[in-house]
Image (spheres, rainbow, N blue to C red):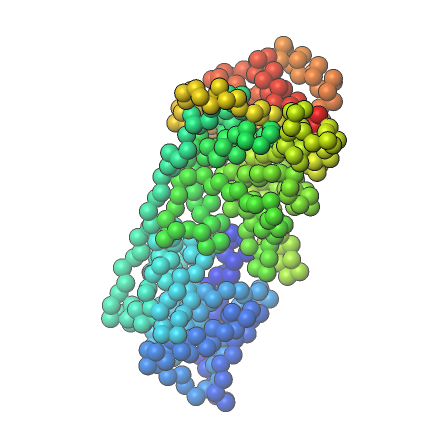
Length: 503
């Protein structure tokens, strides 16, 4: 007799079904696991044996063979412990075999039989729901998995509770979803003194999900402005929150099973490796660009990042996804993010101040900013010089709109974009391309003439030309205008032609 249980193996944010087969056969006592397991899966036999011993369940003096099918799919992670135990319990006729086959299980076993939470409960629940199965998981993972309403989630504290549940002695109640964390007020945009043009650029970037590059001397407020960006972004929709949480689940970042409506804001240090930014490593884990999906990726001190790391961002920026290729797997993660970067104009940071600049000016600015390649620079929709703040501005009271007021305008602009295209949640003007871009972003005659003159005089690339149109469409949406007019085009061009300072 071959008993079966089911679990999943993760490939990016998707979960593939794995059938766990258990056979008891005559022969010398042995416990073997086959089916391309990694080290942590192979060690499951010792954890399962100890956990069953803690329940006073003795293994028979037979050969126990566990097969993980399909055999050519790599199996990684400690979450295979529980399904292996389920298949073995079914083979020993301790629990009904049909009950073991009706669920998808994942969880790590401790030596005393307690169930330890594992990553990936949310995508596993999605996969179980697609196959009309219930999900069995550790109690600490139940709140996360229960967000998939179409799937019944059984969350057990220990293997003994699992046995009592499936033998009808003490059924476990269905798990309840975790808390929904709303958007917090956080830091207010009004705290920034002066820098009205930078605040305006930040609002435009948020409204259309445009990439923004800020260049200016140290202490001018670039990082301060970026830190207030989450406060003006609209909250995640239900679909976006689920997409983002699935990635964070695989990275083990969900806090007690709760799902946040706040957009991710990731700010890796400039010493981060390529695998940390793009994703990879031994198990092809998601990187910072995927963890920033539907949110913001802030790269402070942009020229200090390794150039090879920066160049890997070019394709994900355009496609909204990244494929991590390994010898035995090709994993794709979504990464639709807003890239916000800050940079000093040169290494000393005071290129435009003759009294404080180093003796290498202006060549130091060209060398420093030259670390950012032209193709990457061309992908920034908005390029802004952030001047130093005067002491008189610092002594003035806070002025300008609060983050809540700006967020309201951004939300209205985003709603206009989604309604105009009848698109799914998360659509923004930065996604416009082809015929759709021409249909909704073509300026009036005066705006078209201005754009043509600028494109010819300053040599805009085709990508730059289209990005100006997208930004102009966003400015028109903030202005509640159905037509892109000359003032909208002029403002979009002013941000496009603003080059980082080089002397």
